[in-house]
Amino acid sequence: MDRGGAMEADPFHNAKEDEHMDAQTFKAGKMKMIQPDSLKDPKLDKLKEVLLGWINESLKAEHIVVQSVEEDLYDGLVLHHLLARFAGVHLTLEEMALTASAQIRKLEAVLEELEKRLEQQDTKWDVSLIHKKDLLATLHLLVAMVTRFQPEVELPSNVKVQVVVLEVSRTGIQSDVQTEVLTEDSSSPLFPRRDNAQEVSDTNDPMEQLMDMEVKQTMAGVGLQVSDLDQQFSDGVILLLLIGQLEGFFIPLSDFRLTPDSHEHMLHNVSLALSLLADLGLQVSAVQAQDVVSQDVAGTLKVLYALFRKHGG
Image (cartoon, rainbow, N blue to C red; front, side, top):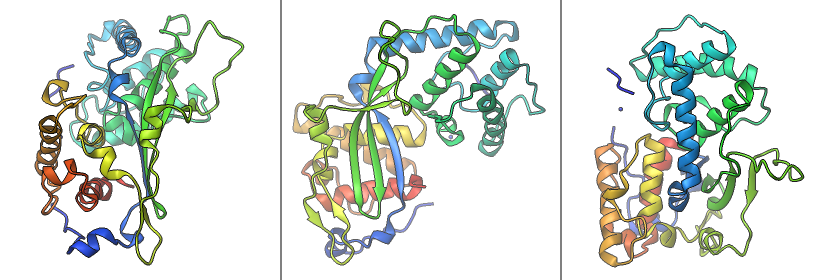
């Protein structure tokens, strides 16, 4: 859909501080990323295709054409028109919100009215996630709208995605792999959807074992624990997905290796991630791509800290 996106001081001063940081320097935060394999799932592609078709058919009279679930709903324009179309609610809002602050105000007003009518106790989206073009949150919102306003529309059933959940708290940085339900299995009425729309992956899942962050060292004085961060991010894949998710843009899969199988591929991925951080003004002092690839804990923490300091809440 055609439409008319300060460097912070590095808190790490020497090698000892790299290894032993005060827990107060971390901001609590929680975020989700869809796993690369799930992004390539044909069932997910089909769901996106059906949702796009539903939007375009619904707004045909307004001559609105949406081309991407990820890119075209962040500013509130499409959601505003869908609200008017299905709920008869016409808010006094500017048609084209051109600045980020105007877009957020518009989204707040539109989502408030939508949520009154969707009647969901546990929403999987918010203004910030939609504005950041978060695919997972946007899909949850659209599925809820179709289910509420046009339940006769046949969505692909049993669409699930594997998500990595990253959380920073005073006790450390933790990650987990979960299965998140986007649409129900229509052929299995005896197995109702869980209230939180999530199922924790089986503990024997090798991917969950990979993301299970066993504590490897304790930071002096405050009990802040650092786990297998070095291993989780050393190939650059999750790091690139995290950057794209947080900053609200899509990194073309052709630009990096989803399944790096050599040191050169990993180095390419991490170099791209550091370059993107630099372009975003998030300079990571003295960290080289080789540091992250070689699983240097201090270097990996510097990169993550730069992101969490900006987005951690």
